[in-house]
Image (cartoon, rainbow, N blue to C red; front, side):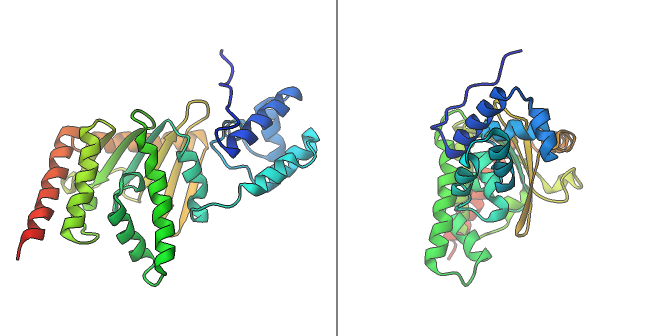
Length: 280
């Protein structure tokens, strides 16, 4: 069985910490399971730290410094990574998303952040924070657009999104803005940059009635599932739990319209918004 892929420590601070953790663990002749057992976490969690897909917490960093006698290296660098432009409940998921090779997402109410236009994202942030100063909204928008830059790469990550029909029908702002937002999604699908399906109202009850779901796959680490609700989020790595949510997503894909029919519906609704905008 081939060994783990070498990390490029210069690619990100988390990759640097992960590369050093892998080096120190290997030098100590410890397995990922052995190191994880001391921290009451799984070996796969240690693998995710080493791959840079999970954020290292200060308590883990302190233990690694004590175990490997690294003179505070892990703790110092871990503290430097604590600042994030994202809300606390989403920061670790956003960091994992940035290094994922596959992202699958079910969106029940809103166009996913990676696929949003600037005006759409601004309208959403203003709805979330109706009294925030413009500077705060601009900072949130800048972070959202920086995330969306992931899709400038022509091939990775692979993105597959299932949109509930409610995403298309709920006018977040003006008809013109909605037409632009949906045409943006359609354009990415037509360029074959993303795979998009629509779960129609006629599907009735389905496997993800309880809310949004994001699944992330990685080249050299176990997959993660992220569940988000109002002001909170959970990043899950338990293999059995993630497998259950992967089945949920497969069921959604099987229930949703085909990619071709979904694209036709998205473009049709966009045209409806455009015509509405033109009405006197």
